[in-house]
Image 1: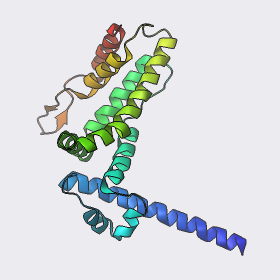
Image 2: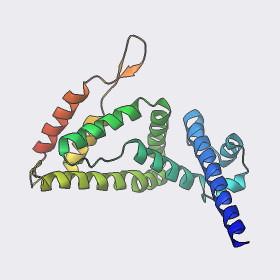
Image 3: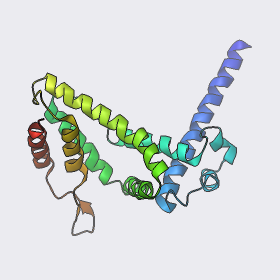
Length: 204
């Protein structure tokens, strides 16, 4: 009996995980299509084909739900690398960010949440704590490893260096190709070289 009961629990756990995955996809699609402000728990449940209770068993509110799902999306989309040397770390970071920028659904979600956060101070504070702080902490650890390896100066201003890394990686306009697609204006290797020079210059 115990073995049978155990198999049922495992099956139930897999089913719950599947439902969570379906809801997660529905949340991201709803954010991309309608935006955070107009998104409702009812609309997500309807898109996912589940009852609202399935959502509330997992998240206490829309804000908590979006915070967790988008936080996981952002973290996995552009992880902070640890390759063993700074050049490869920066190259990996830039490459992952470029892939994210080419994902139109993700870029629409991030742009919408950024605009909404300007109008909603509580949302801004929540997402700062959930997204920006952990990623900056991981980025700081990456830079400190480079300092320990002698690849960056010991008196590095890590806050300025992180701003340079993120700014040069993300805050640059994309250009349109002849086919109407977005493309990065600078070659990958050239951008990596510029970021490395900028990081080395960020001294206190």
